[in-house]
Length: 261
Image (cartoon, rainbow, N blue to C red; front, side, top):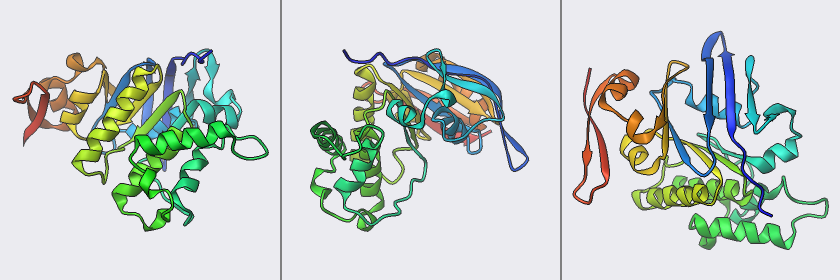
């Protein structure tokens, strides 16, 4: 039986770093089977929220729950099986080949005797999904920035987490691979998993998201269905810019900043 993905929620979350309040008593919840895009200006607290949701960082107060369990009460291995995080600027520290690097995503699942046939199959699927198969034997540190971005996403996908959290996964990718990554994440959610993504491109968010959460100065300015949240008024509050919202010739949404307020 395929495990049911549980709701990921946070309650009264506060985080202070270097004397600055990064998250200010915020609460929210994310539904599996949907893509939630988190938007907000630089310094709004988006990356810090993702780090708390993944268990990477412990807040000063408040809780993150997965279903009816506190996230930080879970063993590290179980937490790694359930939640995968692609950080904003991931670093590659070992000059290993790409297949080995992607295989690290299976560590929460691997037994004491190494990777199983199922582990190898998961790695192959993740590399195919991110167009990395032909890079398999190349050294990871010698790849371009865009190639590294795809490989690191493959590492997260290889772990087959119920919740996939990605912080600016489009950075350094060319337009074609941006569409590929967004489509892959959309399909991942459609399979019943939860996907939470931080983006800066408003048009991509409008095309890609089911739900939108907008942050401002450590608070949640708005959250809900994409069309209810991505309004000109809310964008002006969040970013201090006027935007025009419309559609392309093919009917795809467009959200274009036109001037600073």
